[in-house]
Amino acid sequence: DQQVKQNSPSLSVQEGRISILNCDYTNSMFDYFLWYKKYPAEGPTFLISISSIKDKNEDGRFTVFLNKSAKHLSLHIVPSQPGDSAVYFCAANSGYALNFGKGTSLLVTP
Amino acid sequence: EPEVTQTPSHQVTQMGQEVILRCVPISNHLYFYWYRQILGQKVEFLVSFYNNEISEKSEIFDDQFSVERPDGSNFTLKIRSTKLEDSAMYFCASSGRTGTSYNSPLHFGNGTRLTVT
Image: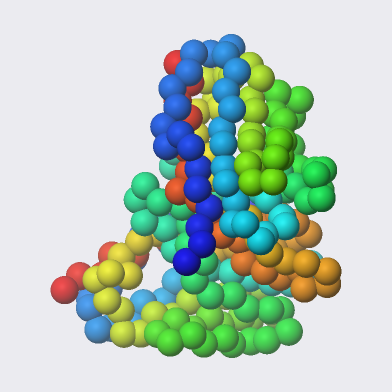
């Protein structure tokens, strides 16, 4: 039962360009969405979040867009840097639990 | 910056043995969680814990699993009789959400890799 889906397992972007990571969800009851970044041998690190009452949230180089009618959210990173290379997880909050997608591995090349 | 710490980083155990995974959440946080990630799969919710009791648990969290906050700082996950399929990375997390401000991001530890042989 995959309520949060990240259909692209990997993405490669050149340094300085925009990285766009996508996420779809099925449960219209989700009211809070988060993006986490994960490096190997480390736990997920919170990156940015958005409430369902908003359609955009920006924090420095990171912007999350939410399209509720399409049940779709995306994370934009601009400009991308080599240090952004990591696995990015989309998550949605229902009650106490976070439902995670399978992650997208981002590689930013110099 | 305060962080969630987990010990050990790697635990190897034989099938049928009991294991206890330990976590020290961020000190002023009130909500505690265990998640796991089987190799190549997504991060899955196991259990949440608040006010010394389980607030929510997933289907994965069956009778073989238990959680405890034995003192003011530690939060443990016990697996009574491990199975091969319990092999995974187990992540502890905590959050500071209180009252109606429930949307507080989770802070994760670096995980314990459990290998059941």
